Image (tube, rainbow, N blue to C red; front, side):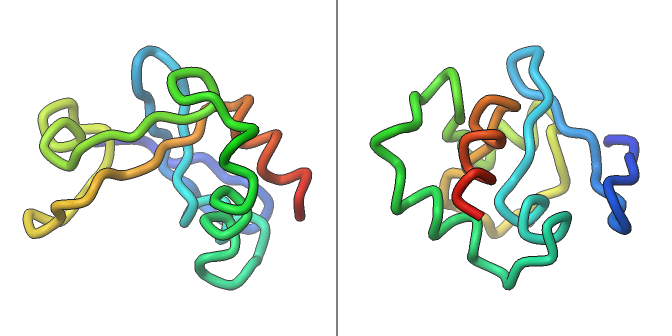
Length: 95
């Protein structure tokens, strides 16, 4: 599906959507050694500052499976938020 890159001490799978590299909240928490859920909370606290389609995408599980963006459970039903580089940079400012 995707290759791995090393960021700090963590291996993160390379994900692309709409021709852009993207990351998940879990990737961000892992790389920045934050407790699970930290990135999602910061995103939700500042959501009004993020522009969908520019800073992040909401992607349904079937589209993730179809385009092989990343591994996802067959049981997954909720949309996944994928952050672009600009969204990532905005989000980590709050750390």
